[in-house]
Length: 317
Figure 1 (tube, rainbow, N blue to C red):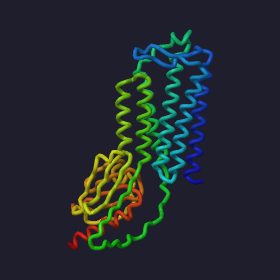
Figure 2 (figure 1 turned 45 degrees about the vertical axis):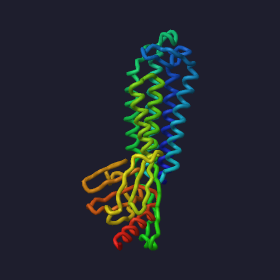
Figure 3 (figure 1 turned 120 degrees about the vertical axis):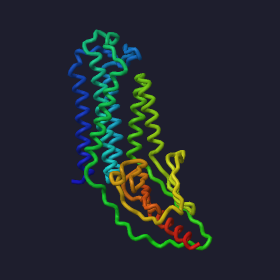
Figure 4 (figure 1 turned 135 degrees about the vertical axis):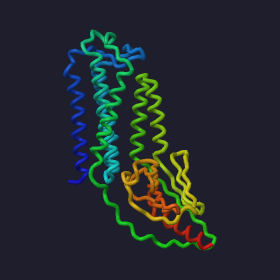
């Protein structure tokens, strides 16, 4: 049985279990809930809007199933990588905790109320523990899903010699996108939007800005030319990290994981610097200072060839 089959089987059981928990939890206290029931509270904590019991239950189920579908799509599209499986498990964990937690909080507020207007007060701060629980369960999901090896890529052959004709100029451009950061940024932004809908203004703004920042840094574009190696982030191509050609001793392709270079994002260790948006093949630069600089990017072989060719051309001048 492959990791993909195991993961999808476990994900299916988890989705079914959480769906059952939402249904059982709602119907177990059905007779003690008003209909319609309070489903929204103002800044003061007093209920200010309602929804029929059936409508609220359907809303909870649809919200959870949308989260589950997103997680399964992430897993299916990137099942060969641990990062994709871990991202999907994190979405399933955080989504389940959030859906069940908010449903339980709403149910508790309405329990034994004569009408939705008499539902318990629900101050904004009571939502914070649910968000914290979702973050914790999401982290546990990431830890559980980050099991097993990546699918092994084909062995890369030796770098072919790349010779530039006198006066010839060449440019190599490639890019990379991190599913992991896209998922983290998307979840953070989603939780921020939900917090905003619940009128939890301070945490909502922090979460939304954090989510947008992570999304902006979830992709990178790498360019190699006679000036050196230039890495720019996000759709705005900013910020930018430049390494001048005269700083580079040689280039090669290496396979690296985030754990080997200090984690995701821009990492600086005593002898290594890395721009790590996903595990796998990286453009590895050996700098004259003795440091190694790793950039996770798609199809880095030609980029390494061009760097070496440019260094050779420069040394011949």
